[in-house]
Image (tube, helix red, strand yellow):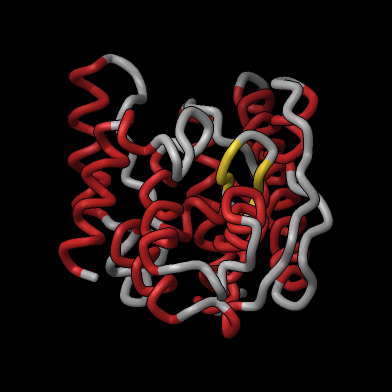
Length: 222
């Protein structure tokens, strides 16, 4: 029995660490259901570690973003967003197999919910610890927050360039006007570079194979 006590203490410590994490995230999920985060861990990471200057983040409500833009984002990033509970299991299985073959995390299966979890609460570092925490945050968000609110947070906080966060900020930065006023082609270009917004912009998307493919897909269907 004495030999088992250290194991029990460790397991108890792990449980309470998880419980504390869940409580903290749940509290912030409730707050962020109504209040926009003033800052995110990703913003801090980009500024402190990579030295990116912050561009003043401009917020825009979901209802003021053109419906066609919202539909394009969902279509290219997570077609089943309003149907799933945060995860696309078939995509996860495929990504797991490909990562096992590669010997490291190279391929993802992130839904918009997953991206909100790491954009608002975590970072974009590719490691299994972050993926593990991301899964827990995703579940809590899906339980507490509405799909519309998560989508609004995604569009207002996702990374769109070096120090550029959110679609309104990106639209002002790249085009000098609100995302409610840019052309359909400009919207497509913004959305196309979400696959790699650090290295490419709406003006240089032709240099990226994935961005070119996404742009052509959007042009074909929208």
